[in-house]
Image 1 (cartoon, rainbow, N blue to C red):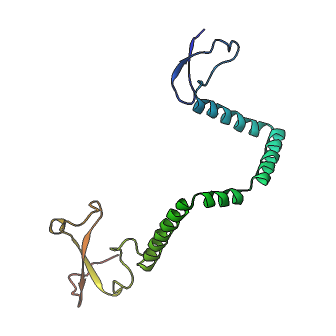
Image 2 (cartoon, rainbow, N blue to C red):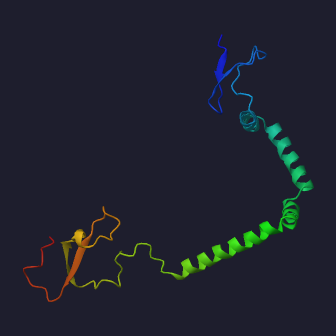
Length: 162
């Protein structure tokens, strides 16, 4: 019979409790691991027992009725005015950021083509783009080409698309 076991929560190896003769030990005695064991037991019990689930829901309902959340929050804010002041300042800066972002252009990709940027009925030539001349390009794996507009198309530049 093994004298050690590996805790299912923390993964550490421990000596078995000799008082647990018939039971298999799966969790060590630390508070965190015991809480994990209790949480797992309750989750399994809620799935398997409708009666337990109903009693648990009724118990929670009674607890929330006696200790409403808005009362707790109001008392906390009254007792911690410095926290509230700091939170108001942070909220103001978040609101300011949101305003400045919404006033900017909504285009995320600034190099994307739009209908307004190209004249649709013109002829364009795609040429390889020399990246060595411009080092400020961050996305190095993007296909970057130079787009030249050709006005007054000559017959030798027009390609047959069929």
